[in-house]
Image (tube, rainbow, N blue to C red):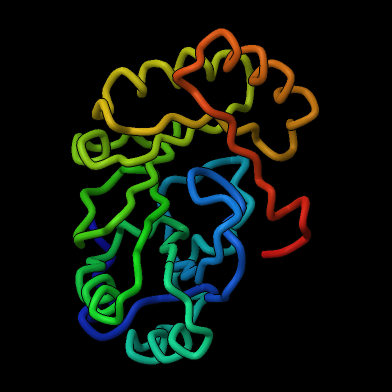
Length: 207
């Protein structure tokens, strides 16, 4: 299933787009232009951008207009997120960014096969909808959100299925960070294949 109410060769539904600092995962601390696409059918109960779920609540923007905004700030790295960005064919957007010398990354639940030659695939699986096989093959980064103790086992189940070069991250759910971060620290010390990811942009009070 892909949302088909837009011509993705020219436009995409966008909740917001902005130049900032990547706050989490492998590229934490790097300047990045974020494109947050509208639309999601995964339905995570602790999602902090639920406003992105409804496609009709957000404008349809021309890809070329997004490119002009990105070039104005001289960004060299674009993160495509959501919502669930893999609902759409991203080939045109990604190809145009690459032609401009801009590296591309996606943050996705992995529920849909990605259409587009992305440079970096951040796979963040959710319990509410199963990922597809393509996500395990393509993942450069596995980022598992830890909400309670049982999530460590769930994280390992996914770690066993990704490719051998995939970098593994455990990230506390923001609202339960005080409770879960100590457990994550001890887990990573005992299982050093994992790294810790924090939502540092929230500490810095930036989007």
